[in-house]
Image 1 (cartoon, rainbow, N blue to C red):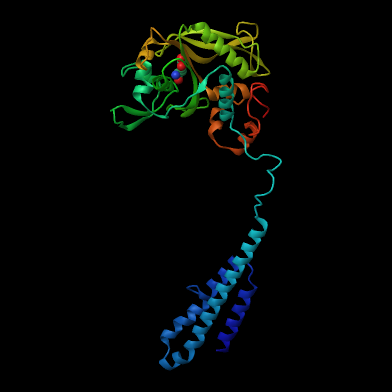
Image 2 (image 1 turned 180 degrees about the horizontal axis):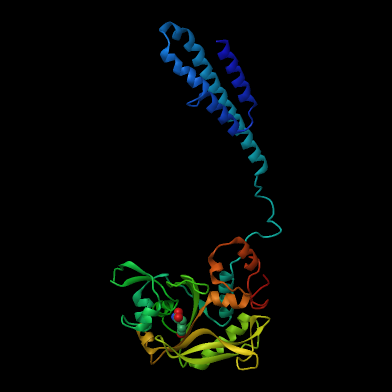
Length: 366
Ligand code: DAH
């Protein structure tokens, strides 16, 4: 009995001296765990004579209750201390001014999209958007790519298993061009729009990610010709790259939705291992780089969108936003754009306080 009293006293003393939750838990296991000394004593009760049991059971039960209570109290006390410490150190004073160094940054893709909106707004273009979950009529058919058109196969399309209510195949849009169709159908003509947004293709390496960004441009009006297209692209690219010496080369190409179609190259020089845009690609030390696709909107596309192609003409272009960002701000791996790595964002991101404006130069300092 005295043995029980001594052990109980020692255990209670150890519990009140324990100062971490782990230490208390270790003491609980030592006393009340399966192999704990109190648990072992409780087991001996079954083998005793009724008289012995009557004599010893109350003391053992009392020891078990005392130790269990002491452990619960000690755990509570430790939790309270921890909570007080957290309350004291983790306070958040919402009335404090914003931190001197802003913590968040604007992603280069968002920054470039803002720059594009700013530049094109100045030229009278509105910003339009369309759904990323599209149907194959808007994404392909109305853009003059019928079911058997070989260009459909080149788009590496993600399809959904189900068709929509009009029995159209559903997909993730492979380009922003369907926004041309939706805007012509919703708003008629004349039109001057850009449509930035996400697009999807089943493709992945250092320069391709399954999701990437494009911006589409569309002008529909009367007597529009290739000269308008070239002037618009030159004006846009000079403002975007903040250089007056941007030189474009229009090369004949093919897209189902434009006729004629042109691929637009931009001249650049290699300076210290880096591509620096500017100058003719034919100048010494210079070369041409393919930048975007464009052309005069195909008559059939204007018809599909419900307009009369004898009355309305237009031009369109499509360009990769991520590619524009890489060229302007010097990143070389597209995959890092979508890793969400805070260090990359802090290095390449932009201050939320720097809104791109034409007067300040659209690419405000980062
Ligand atoms: N939609 C094309 C693509 O994703 C890009 C494109 C080319 C868009 C020519 C256009 C255009 O509007 O005229 O590859």
